[in-house]
Image (spheres, rainbow, N blue to C red):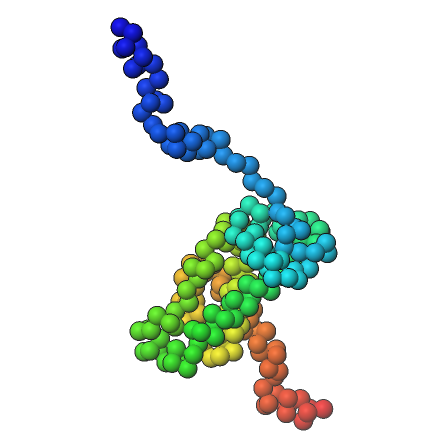
Length: 204
């Protein structure tokens, strides 16, 4: 009887190794999310200056909770957070332009080659950590696409092709609006057609 009682005393613990018990206990008691460590990725004014700052900023951006906290701090008027967020937008904007340069090479402007070459199709998997359903993550996704569209339009890619290149980065409706805006901005930078300016001179 004593042996039977000993063998049936703690069946759960004897059936699982300690490592699994630790794993299950960690699931039951999840760690609390930590606030962003601004000192790690900026100076006291929010300037991202050193390589260590940039590395820490990139790491922070991949934590959805911390990223959204910085976005909320910036929206609330925190000057340090606003400068940090401005740096994030600058970096993702540069990334969007790089993708545009790679996917609008001379060969990619030929439709037959573009459809066959994987190099001509944007791969947005590198921003998968940006949550679509969060304000901050969604904002950065829009910034990336806006930079991509601006550069790609300048290099001759049509809007229809740009819409087909979204691949889940942002919604179709948002992308269509951005394309209209970037197209209009491009026309403003180029100025009015020669015919219009000539007519204005004649009218005057």
